[in-house]
Image 1: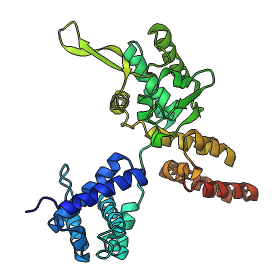
Image 2 (image 1 turned 135 degrees about the horizontal axis):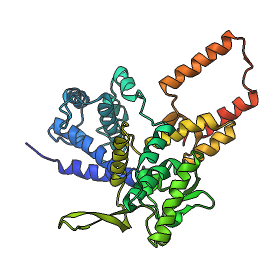
Image 3 (image 1 turned 90 degrees about the vertical axis):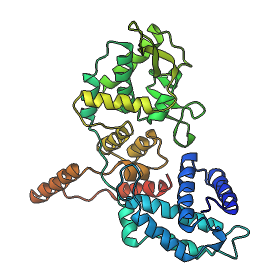
Length: 369
């Protein structure tokens, strides 16, 4: 059986360049798209894309409905099926405008990759994501030992993540000079820090408690005064591995190089939560904790706009929709509180009209964030 089609390979190569250069997609996203296209090709016997027929799209959808995840051996989720179908739809829409395909494929042909409305709603349904409370994070940090230099680093890492709201990959690449303790700021310099979408911005320490700030301050002081780290050295150095007294390789302290990725940070988080007898919360979940805290502390639209910007969100709608979902238990508390107010004849004055208009305007302006 044919394993590839030369003409198809050229088209996929051109499409990959289009996604990376024109659509500015990350290499990993492009790879996932190409994998979905390759999967579609297998179901057609690697026929020329120009010979596309709507029955091929139908057959591909049936194939996905019956496919299983090779790791779990369970059926593919609706979200996975949806993302692969949308990747094929976008590809054939692009193909319909390319020389050699315009007379063969129409833009409407791509619509045959649409899932049913029922499956589409299931795929796009949001599910509650676990979010640690500030008290849980504090319990983890305060219960961590801080005797050795590695223990000091690990505890400061937990504190810095909730204090700064920075993403784990950004933290892994930060240098000492990116933190200004006097001004309580963190400079996310995209030229050196692996920020999301390579965005440069400055954030201020979130008001989560003096204890977290003290842990970070103590760590930076230890790093610069005791270990004599300079401003261009990593804020959170990797673990140094060497031959120990027992003749075996093991951790012997801090290295003077940064982590190459966020993997070690996530392992430290997992171990810290397990040691505190709490379920594991990954570093990114701390940003949801901060979004929820902002909803409680912010009193005006301007307050929440500043809080959102401190999370490096382009608009407050991102903070609300992606991070700010009200937890089910909190939702119940709020509604029950309203019920008690209504029953006791409490203050039922409507929100100030100007405030409501400001919130709506900010949400609309941030819709692209």
